[in-house]
Structures are given as C-alpha cells and as structure tokens.
Length: 309
Ligand code: A3P
Image 1 (cartoon, protein in one colour):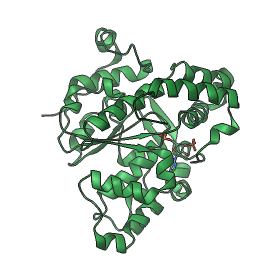
Image 2: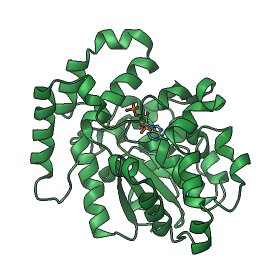
Image 3: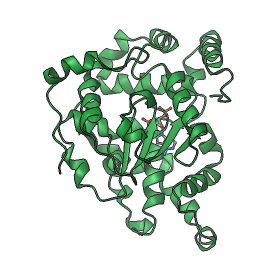
C-alpha cells in the first residue's frame, strides 16, 4: 500500500489544534507535515532515524551515517556524496510530507535512512514503538543559536537580519521561543530515551565528534550493528569516511558550492549548510553575560539528568 500524499493545510486545522505542542514552538509551516506524518507515516523496523535540533550537525551526521551504512556499496573515489548534498541522500520526512511527496519514502529501499527535527514527544507512536533505531546529535545551544541566526539570515536574505538582531534572536532562544525550542527539552527528551533504550537510541555530541571523530564513527557503526572489522580498520576505512564527510571536503565540492535544496517549506543554497564548522563561534556574537544566561538556564533545566551540553 502507498502512503497518501500530505493533505493541504486547511485539512489539518482541527488536528493541529489537538497537537501536543504546548511545550514546543513548532513553526506553523511545519505543522501540516508533522500532522501528516503522525497520521500516515509507515515506519519499517529497520529504518534509521537521524534526529537533531536544527543547526546541531545534522548535515554531517547524515553524511557519516550514509557513508558508514553503505560502505561496501561505493568506492570512495566515486561516492554519491561527491556529487550529491547529504540532504539529497537522507531526506527530512517532515519536508517530504509537507510537500505531498511522501510516496518517495515508500519507494526507498530498506534499510532507509531518514531524518527529522521533530521532538521525541511529537514522534508518532508508530515510530517510537516500531523498533526503529534513532541517532540523535546535540550541540552547545549557544553555537546552535549562532548557526541558526546565520542560516536564517542567509535563507531569507538580508531582510531577516534587520528584523532579528542577534541579541533579540539569542533572547528568544533563552525564552525557548523559536523553531523546535526549547533546545534543552529537545535534547533532554532524546537523552532520556537513549538511557532507557540504549540499543535503539544513540546520543552523540557535535563537540565530541569534532574532537574524537574516529571513536564516534566507530560507535555509530557498532550501534548500527555493523562494526568495522579489523581488516577495515587496518585498511583505513574509518579515516577515509571521516575525510570524505569532513567539513573541508564537503564544503569544497561543486554540488555544495552551487546546488540548492528545494522541498516544500525549504529552499536554500547548499553552501548554507557549511559555514564554519567550529566549536565556540558564539564568542564572536554573544557577550559573556548572554552566554552565562543561556548556560544557566540550560544547566538548571538539565539538572539531575546526567546530560551536559
Ligand atoms: P556553523 O554554522 O556553526 O558553521 P545542520 O547540519 O544541523 O544544519 O548544522 C549546520 C552546522 O554544522 C553549521 O555550523 C555547519 O557549518 C556545520 N557543519 C556542516 N557540515 C559539517 C561537517 N562535515 N563537519 C562539521 N561541521 C559541519
């Protein structure tokens, strides 16, 4: 059976009002896609979901997971990621449903690698109960806010920067008042689930991945149930994957310099996904007081959870 296309916005008004979104601010334009997913998405038990708060390293995780999972399919010198953006090979289900293109998901061979920014509490029961694996990536909220500010400004050209000076944008993040916020709840929900079901939910941190890429890519492969063999390790396969998916490599490719993503609510140049790729760029944007404020809120909200971000 095929998944019905997402219905137009007006069909979802009633359902949207029943959605448990009190604790998260979901942009209104994403709601029809999310509603359609909750009603119609048919997960397969071997689906792999890559999930994140926006600007936390989703593009990188897509590249790494795709390359690791398909590592015997393609020679690295003729790899799909040399001519496709990571978002072309791992779709956001939110975007496809919002665009009425859900049938594309049905056409994908198993095991599928899919992505979403949905908070855990909004994932449909069909996903959380299906046995699907989830890899979540989190990032220092201060850097995610900086990254999102630049991304939004670029996506909507210069106008947006005038409407949203950085200080105001940062304040909105502290109030938990923008897309998929609050950041701390987004990460905390997946953190708790990764403790409850470690075999199904892997929790990664952007900063740790930059610091120790090899250990983290190995963790990822083990989590997928397909660890690197001794032979692969000796042959440098892990390093090759890391190099192919590195910020410098992906940023330098023609497809990521010139191409663009255009699905439903989402039209954006591929180069917007590769800005600096560093830890601590918030220092160039936020004052120490602003940083202290957000750090304090996050610390308080995460207290006792064992999670630090
Ligand atoms: P900056 O804006 O701080 O540079 P997402 O992929 O979730 O949209 O996140 C985008 C952020 O990840 C951007 O951060 C981007 O530069 C960074 N990024 C993209 N590809 C990366 C890679 N291969 N390695 C490390 N960081 C990467």
